[in-house]
Length: 473
Picture 1 (cartoon, rainbow, N blue to C red):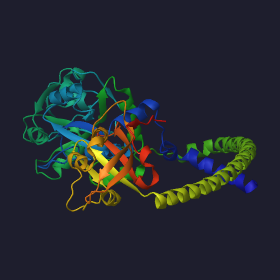
Picture 2: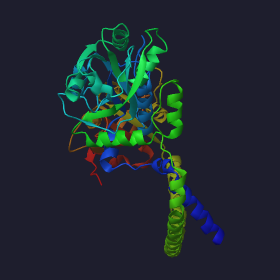
Picture 3: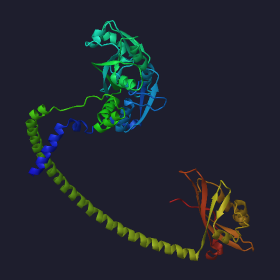
Picture 4: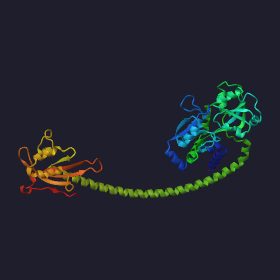
């Protein structure tokens, strides 16, 4: 018991000392979030091309960069397919968000102003901001550049920099390389932007000997949705929070040379100060946990005993029903054998022949016994109503003709009639038939009947029978 408690203490202490482990625990979805996920299979994200290594296309249809890697990781954790659509500018992108063409703005700075009200997640990219210049940058940073021209990229949040630092002259350029060259050839005193994009470009393109000075500013990128999509915004935040350290390391490993966000670190002196308190808290948690587990085990054992008694009662009832079912099955089998024996004897004493008449095809379908009963060759005789009536005695033809017409009052018929054989002999036939319409299928109609030769079983004076409808049971 002591060893188990000691293990519990160590595990709890490890969890308390490792915030990454706590933050990586799976988060549950609310009912509204589950409903949103059930109704959507694809996460439609709109982006405006930035610069490497943030987000670029480089002539291909697949986006590349840190933003694209983060978006793929979010879609993977939410279990959704990812569809990234590229837009020419921020105006078209926010219009697509308003129209519902896209669900999410994939790379948006919380400081940017949009015509459409949007809601932001916490930033998933927080990169340092720096000044780049060929001249010496004042130690006071932006405040020492009043009156000077600062180059920025068109469409970035830094276009409104003069509202933060009055007296600063901001000039926007169409792309990052043009803005850096303006600082390199003296058209602007310095370039201002995120250090990740600038350093990435400077290592690959010879622009000039630019000095860098990092500022106490950051360039943040977050996911954004319409302000009314609270469920989607919550899902996006949970998807970002589920990106673990291994995934982050893999993402940033693809873009070497880019400064990573600062990781959480624990200072050792503060840890030693908190260690006694953590141990005491761990012991309290272990005691409470053991007490809770014991109560749960007692409750579970009681429920298990009740469930066993319930299943025993059900098993007894099922056995009784099984015995009753076996008894009834034996009775049904005995009755079935008796019925089969009666049918066999009836077939030996008075063989029957079957026929079917379908009005749609205007002919009858006979079995072999029917052809034998009429003494006709199946290859030469076609059993149409006209051909059948030609073989019937002229005084009985009206009764037989009733078989080939529909009557609501005479769906089931029992008739007897005389049949003239090819050698002139007259035989008496007894016919039972039923007219039916398929109510559940295609509405096809047919009359099905059985015939017997009863000449040898009836006295001549009793052979004069008329049409006798049979009432349905």
